[in-house]
Amino acid sequence: MIDSKQAAEALTDIDDIVRRVRQSQVYHLSSLLMIWWGVLVFAGNIATWLWPRHGDYIWIAVNTVGILGSIALSASGHSVTGARTFNVRMLATYLLFFAFGYFCTSVLGHFTPRQQGTFWPIYFMLFYTVAGLWFGYAFIAIGLGITALTLIGYFYIGAGFPLWMAFVNGGGLILGGLWMRRV
Image (tube, rainbow, N blue to C red; front, side):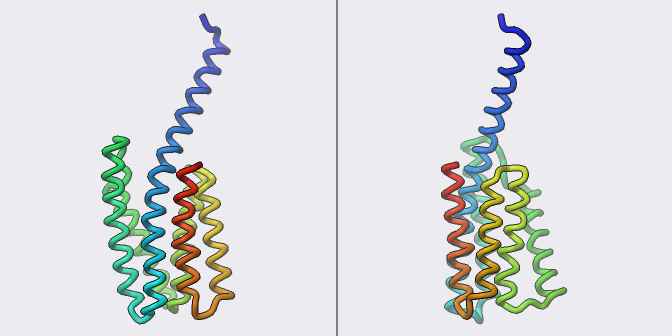
């Protein structure tokens, strides 16, 4: 027989295990998505650096392929975990996210390409940082780190800014995704 104190301790241990498993599942899928988007963002920034006049088309393609890949990763994750991570609500979230960003940069702000190259990573990292408040400190560290390096690049890197961002944003997402696999 166990007493009420031992039962309470056992329930606390079970809750802790459930929390860690849930965080592990979130980190696993998030790491895959971060690596996926990191590769695309890296390629998009390199392409923008090489062909700056085609930046609009490059980023439309990057975001379209990114969303389609996110759907595919979610479907493959569903077969392993049984949990759906990309559904109609997630698609609506992406679309609203991009629509608001477009509204800010093109309707309200008329941002230059350099300003857009700064705004979008910081905008994305805001959500990573906020997600960290619920899902774990790794998101906060990645979000704040990429934001700080983006701002350093904006103020101190000249014409090579897209190349800088390939390594900071794309590379940062890839490294963050690999790090989350180990956390």
